[in-house]
Length: 141
Ligand code: SF4
Ligand code: SF4
Image (cartoon, rainbow, N blue to C red; front, side, top):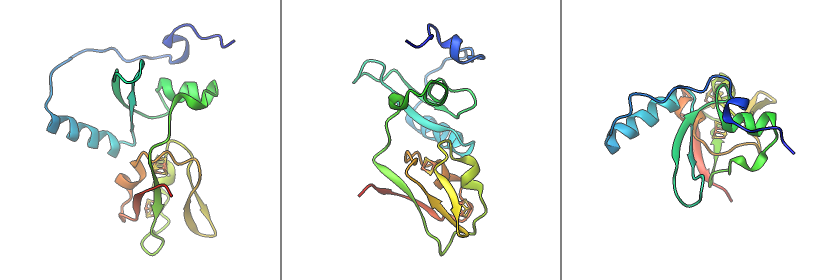
């Protein structure tokens, strides 16, 4: 079995929860957008499906999800979205910003073209941060 008992066994510096306040939907939308610009992905945690426990915004550096997925190989801890990123190669300048910001190693350069691979979770962070607006999210076929 896996030797995990507490979150603190996995994530060393769990942030303190403080300054809790009520916010309206516009504030939430702005906050989510600002997190995307920082490269943070949004995940909905259900804990006991279908009840939503949290909307989390983080990246691989301090996230319980990524620790479980990457270090302990809990592949099913996160489900892929219904969409997948697609790059318009007529617009893309191969700057590499999307490669650096993708949390799933889903973008590579092949033959001088930026390519999305099967690791894409459809989080949209690359789309938000592409300086050329060359990335769309499209429904999976
Ligand atoms: S960030 Fe945009 S322009 Fe830069 S490599 Fe990615 S898709 Fe191309
Ligand atoms: S949409 Fe896909 S390719 Fe873009 S950042 Fe998210 S996982 Fe990576």
